[in-house]
Structures are given as C-alpha cells and as structure tokens.
Image (cartoon, rainbow, N blue to C red):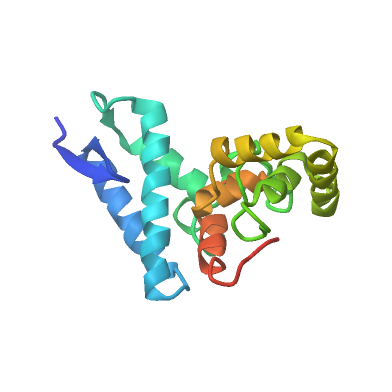
Length: 198
C-alpha cells in the first residue's frame, strides 16, 4: 500500500501517491533551475506551469476524489517538457505525441484580446490571430463597419466585453494556436515586458 500526499497545485487540491509526488517535485525543481529569466518572471512562469499541471490533472482525475498516480505525472511531464525544449525530464509535446521534433506543433486556437498589439482594447489583433489574417485588414474592416453605422461600434464593444484578454503565457500560446508547453510559456513570460508579438 502506498502512502498518499495532499498537495495544492495551481490553487487546486490534489491527492498524489508517494511516487507521483516525488517525481512531480523533482520535475518542478529541475524546471525552475533551467529557467533563464529574471527572478520576478520565474515566479510568474512557475505559477503558470503549476496552473497548467492542475488543468491537466483535473481533466484526468476530476474533483480530486481519485489519486494522481505516477503514470499520469509522467504523461503531464511529457506534454509540458522543459523551458529550453530539451528532452530531459520527459521531452516536449512533440515527443509525447509521437511526431518528429522538426514537425511544427499546432493546437486549437482560442479567441483572446491581444494586449501586446492593441490600439484600443486588442480586439482586432485577437481576431487577426484567431482567423490568421493580416491585422491591417481586420482594422480596416472594423473601421468600415464603424463608419457604415452604429453596428460596428456595438460589435467592437461586445467583443471587448465578452472576449477575455490573453494576460497569461498559456493564453498567449492558445491565442496563437501553439501548444502551451513549458518552452512556449517561458518564451512568452520572458518577452512580456518587451511586448513579444510573433
């Protein structure tokens, strides 16, 4: 019989068996040591990684009545990888998915407002990312809709209210349609101050 440990991961409570807890702790320590961002941003990246781990655990075990086992921890580690994209400690999502390392990874896009390339609220930039079209085209269409009647104004206001802002590295990955791996989230967290937009 294995001992279990209750742990708070990403603001959620999970029960992990002894092996799973040890493996996850070692991964998080190794991950933190590999980060090449300033200390303030390290905290943000680690919070984001823990939040992503909590999401993946919750998808598998639900409300926490089931115990998180070592195979699930290994699966999550393989999906997230390391901040530098190395294969150590489980590799990136490309290895977990069985694709080649050179094959570009895609994830479903989600609609968010882009805070890094905004004129008013980032709605047009978010739409450009979502539909994969030129930002200038979206802005011109929005201006035409605005000048043709009040419908354009109300569409923009509704989108401003209804569409969340991509304010975390995981959301920035989802907005661009790339997997929320450790490497990608670290890239967006380290570039947040620079207004990374690619």
